[in-house]
Each structure stands twice: as structure tokens, then as C-alpha cells.
Image (tube, rainbow, N blue to C red; front, side):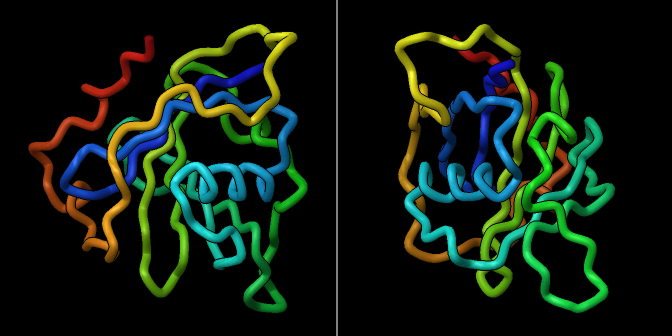
Length: 151
């Protein structure tokens, strides 16, 4: 199963990537793919959160062990956490700079024989030099779902 996903960076200007990933991809590889598609080094500690439709954080999906008591899921597959249209995650990259991304599954598609996954379908906008504050999370007037139209 291939997941077609929109990943939106939490900045004022439009910065997003429409990507396709195999649902069997590990969460660590998913982290590496997203960070790569946005031009980041994947070695920075990062984490995912399950999210509801209002983009409120729910359960954390840790992929880096920062504390001996941490339960981590680096080898769990992406499809264990998102698998259907409308499933959402929040991805925090680099705990010092706190880059925040909104991940929304737009559809599932068949695997293309001539394509290697993960694959970036669309790249819009440039990542700013410096990380922002939580612009969208603090502004209830911004509708993140208005950008859910993949072509």
C-alpha cells in the first residue's frame, strides 16, 4: 500500500511537499525521508505525534531514545500509525529549533512499477533559514485542511 501524503511545514509562507511512501516503511526511514525532502540532516532527534482532525497532539511516537525509560518505535511501520485518508501526524524535527510539520494522508494508491519510494510528487516553497514559533498552532483562524487537494 502506497500512502500519498501532504507534509506542511509550520511557517508563514507556503512550504509543503506531497510525497508517496510505502506503508511498510519504518518510522525511522519516514523521518529520514521527510527531513531529506525538506533539506534537513536526518541525524537530529525528532518525534511524531498522532493527531486528531483539529491538529491537537495525542500519543507520542518516539523514534529516538533520549531517556532509558523511553519506549521507541523506530522500526514500526508507518501504516501502524497512519493508513487511511484523513489520518494525521505531527512531526517535530530538531528539539532545539523545533521545526513542526503537519502530515496528512490524502489517499492510498497502487504501487507504481517504475517508481522508487519514498517519492516526492510536489515541492512548494523554500524552508526559511531560521525556525519559526508555532505560527499555525497558535492561530485558530488558519484552516490546515484547505490544502488537502492533491492532484
